Length: 159
Image (cartoon, rainbow, N blue to C red; front, side, top):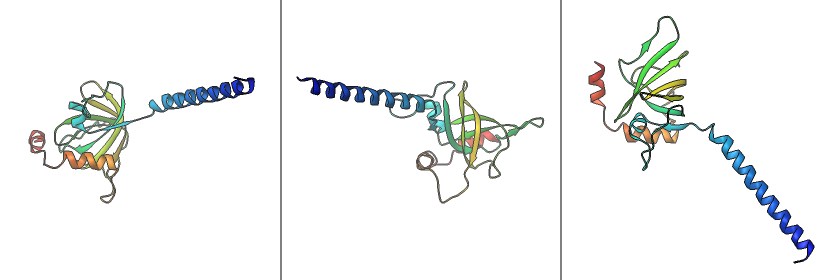
């Protein structure tokens, strides 16, 4: 192999190694900013075929319906606790801040926050469903799958 071909080969290898390193660093940096979407039943029983449960401290988004009778407000602070349910599970959510105007019991919401022990979500943001015409695809799919039947057992427990 002559010198010119060796230099081109080394240059091509250096470019490939640099590109691979750049892609690896970008994916590593983005990994910490990803919030996975869960439903209450996926938090309790696992997500996907591997039934992977969220880890304590993991950032996530959880979508479900606000359980009637579960909203409790602290009179001294802006802290609110409530329960989110779907057809197969219930999780507790706590939030400090002003809730959206459309937030109410029986309403579909998405809470973004950190998973804590005891199947509790410490929410940093609560989003209320605002329009019947548009729902993000993953939320619509999860809601359709998990809300086909009315969760009568959860309504009875709230009374």
